[in-house]
Each structure stands twice: as structure tokens, then as C-alpha cells.
Image (tube, rainbow, N blue to C red; front, side):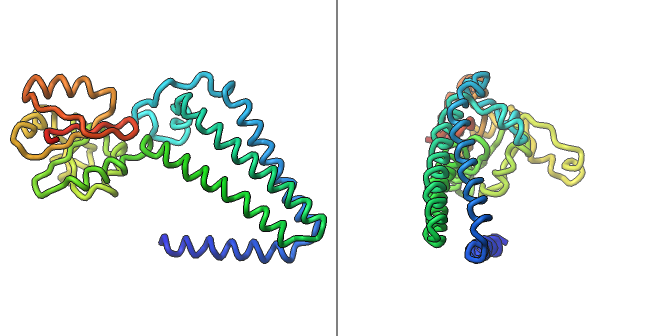
Length: 254
């Protein structure tokens, strides 16, 4: 499916190039004007962004508050929005400068060079988007946590996650091991299909923590003090081995 999607975008790019070659000058200039207006809008957004997001949170909230796109936008902290401000400025500069060059070249009947100028604007925009995704991805997915654990799995390793199946759905795709859910209640259909065995309580986890079997527990940052207290009170073996976004990995192994 991914292969066909990639082929589709290549075909779409070829179609755009052919359409540009056959397009009259007026629609070309109109399209370039829209491009420049988008750049101006991005520049205005970069300027007024601090005033728009002054009421944002100081830190990322728990994963349970980011289950939808709208909730995610509402929980992005102020310092992260300020990082986006630089990205908006780069997008604005690329669209305005390259758009102005493309407009000038189109007026001079240099349509091929104008197209190159437009495509050149996509390079800094694409790199900015990739960098933005890299910075915020750990706050939306447990994929990085799964990759970290995959390097440490053996036949005896057990992985626990304190959260809902919805919140830990990325573990299903990326973690090369079945995992248990701690302090959660199974849904009715899960009980009917025998999945309730994957739901364990805190005491069961603590008992397995003392067996010497490699155990990893994924929790939210806000839950770290609780787990540090209950683990050290019972077994005195507590290690915080990784942090990705608001997810923290605890273990009985170094």
C-alpha cells in the first residue's frame, strides 16, 4: 500500500509539471499570487503567534488529554509553539521570496525557471516539517519507546504499560513483544475474547519485579513519584532508564 501511495505522488508531480507547461500565463500568475499570499499569511502568523498562545500550558499534559487532534492543539505548551514560530518564518520567507522570483520569471516568459523557483520553495518547507515532526513525535506516539525496548528484549523480558489500550496503541505496531496493561479495566468485548488476562493490577507487577526477570514499565512522568515510592519500599530495585516525550521507562535492570 505504501508503495502505491509513493507512486501516486510521483505521478501527481508529473501531472502538475505537464499542467504548468500547458497553462496560460494568467492562471500561472494567479497561482503564484496565491502562493505569495500564503507566505504573507505565514509571516503574520509568526508575528502574532506569542499573543495567540499566551494561555497555553507550561508543559505537555498526559497522553490521555491528547486523544484527538483538537485536544492535542489545546495541550501544546508555550515553548513548543515558540519553536513552531521559527518554522512559520521559514515557510513565509520561502514562499514570498521564491514566489516573487517565479512571478518575475513568468512575466519574462521564463516559465521553466519559474517552476524551478516554486519547487525550490518546497525544500526548506519540507525540511522544516520533517524537523517539526521529529521534535513533537515522542509526545504523540510510543514508537520511540518501542524501538528502545526492542533492543533490550529477550525470551524472558516482560513489558508493562500503565495506560489505556487506546493510549498505547502504537506499542501494538512497533513493539516486538506482547505487553500487559497495569491499573486499567478491560472493555466488555475484551473480556469476552479472553484479552482480560493482559490487564494486571499493581501488586502483580510488583511481585514480578522481584523475580529477577527483566521487567520494563512505561508510565507518564506524573506517575514517576508514585512508582518510585512503591517500588523502592518493596524491592529497593528501581531504575529510570529512558524518557521519550512524557513517557518514562522504568526497569528492574540497568
